[in-house]
Length: 99
Image (cartoon, rainbow, N blue to C red; front, side, top):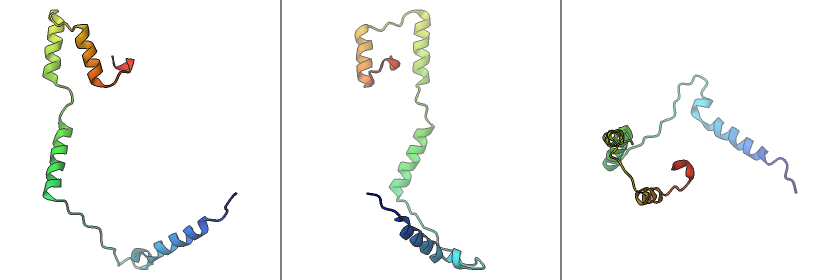
């Protein structure tokens, strides 16, 4: 079964909605619609500040990377097979691309 011509009602509604806007009906454009006002609570503002601060932090712990690189260079960094397996399982992503 095929229904044809269902968008005619939507088009008429869309034209009415656009025509009801004061900025569309004013010939001189002197009318302006009031804007929406959003007010955030103090807690929401603090949460946003913390999120912004966290976004500036690096996900890489540079000092830890430098320590491991140094130990690798000196040859005194060893990881047992069990430690490696535990780390892989703890990561939750068992795809070989992440090994």
